[in-house]
Figure 1 (cartoon, rainbow, N blue to C red):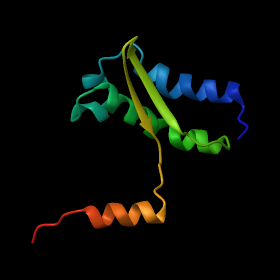
Figure 2: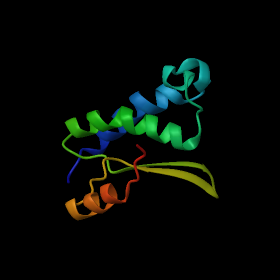
Figure 3: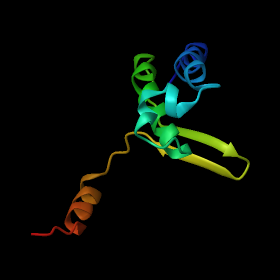
Length: 98
């Protein structure tokens, strides 16, 4: 897929960097009022913010990687779809209680 990288950078700056940089996430961002701002949760939040604007550019958001330190990162894969056979195996492996 081809995407206008300057438009993508503008979306990231406007929707992520400006919103999250130098903020107290627990107080300033409503999503984190009821959710601990771990790297995984921040990555989920960022993926939710970026998914539609990136789609409007004609691209698809595949992954968010949030690097906390040289040795610690969180990766969120967006909209992974299971093939029918994998989905059936997964559903059949679920245990239900009655």
